Image 1: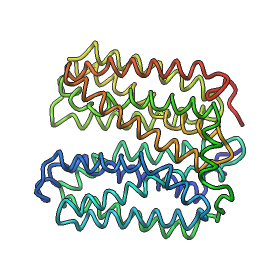
Image 2 (image 1 turned 180 degrees about the horizontal axis):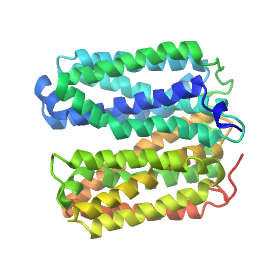
Image 3 (image 1 turned 90 degrees about the horizontal axis):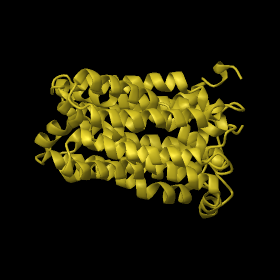
Image 4 (image 1 turned 45 degrees about the vertical axis):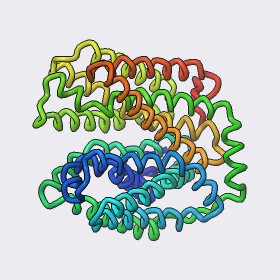
Length: 389
């Protein structure tokens, strides 16, 4: 199937929507000091705006999808994009912390349902045999948001004020809502109830294996990534150039996704195994070689390069494991992914109490090694040797 048939306006809009969703999630990270000073709270309180967002995603993804499964997909997508716009307007105009928290909870609720609708659309719009490529295209927007979202919002906040970062996100969201109303095809909701869909999806042993693999590998990934700045500072980077290393990691992730996305449809299992193997080696290298900025930067770039396509691999594996209800599977995967992110932050924080930052690499390596074993033993279910069409 020619590549041009994948790059149509509806698919491109979904990719930009993915960028918006992830950028909205990470916006406060680079704006912590500015927001804290302006709203009169501590930086840790601003950090809770990120945690609250993630918590809403974890707990609301599955029930929100179940409650809305019968609704037509197009107006639901338009409404979610408009919701992102409204939530960012609330942040932009917030004069106290409670209003800001309200805006973040609203954004988290939109995020909880957004990727279920987006990946449901992507699987239906993908050309035959190219579901993995469609997923990778959507995830390209996510990867760009991770790579440039924090640096760009930090620069914008320092230049013209932190509120403009949320204002720009609101404008993008509202423009996307209008675009979705114009270019997205109409798709009916499901005649099968959300609860029935969930039971049927979770009855699939293949999906259950993917869920276990995702929770374990994301816990390992985010145990170290959550505390990557202290790791870089320990290795010799300074507060003025640590941003360069973070940007290099994000850029490597985008490059890895571009180079390896083709394997999502043709060689998902070996590609994922290779990524997990190299990531395990990188985590061990960070734990054992801490102290050299040059070596640390090289390892971080390799880590980013191999991790870049992993979200596409595991999302495609989940959607392939239960193809009858893609929206429900995407909701389960979204919740699962965020459980791993939250658990990773907790594991990293606990490790930091008993070791220096680079020591977190040992825990991260152990977890990704377990994830590798889960994937390797899933040759018949979850991660088959032959990529399903």
